[in-house]
Length: 156
Image 1 (cartoon, rainbow, N blue to C red):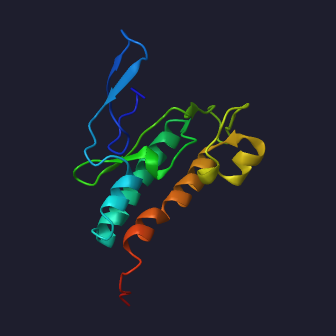
Image 2: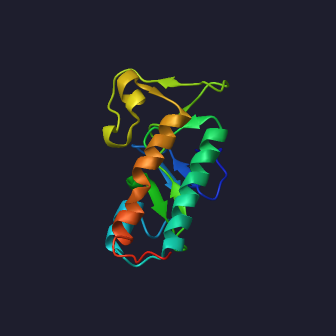
C-alpha cells in the first residue's frame, strides 16, 4: 500500500508495529465510506458531482491495474470520501499482485470472497483479474444514481 501514489488511492501515512494488533494509519477521509455518505446525504448531489466521484474511482482502479494489482473487494464500503468529494479506493486486505503477463490471474484457495460484488467467473473458478475488478466497479457504480437521481428530470 505504501508504494501507491495516486489521488484516488488512500494514502498510507504510517504503520504502528509496537503493539498488537499492528495498525495502519492512512490519510483522514472526513466523509467516511461512500455507501454511508450517500445514504446520509440522499438527494443532495448534482449529476456532475456523482459522475466526478465515479470517475475518480475508475481512475484509482485503473492505476491499481496498471501497477499490476487486483483489488478483489471493490465495493462502496471500501471507497472513502474526503471533504472535497474526492473518492479514494481503500481496504487492500484482499488485494494481490498479478504476474507480469496480460492474462494474469490470481487464484485463491479457500477463504471467503465478497459474493455480492464478485464477477461470476471469479466465483466459479476463484480466479481474479483486473477484469473481475471492472465487474465489481460496474456493480457498485449505480449506487450514487440509485441514491440521488431517481427523482431527476430528464433533459433532452
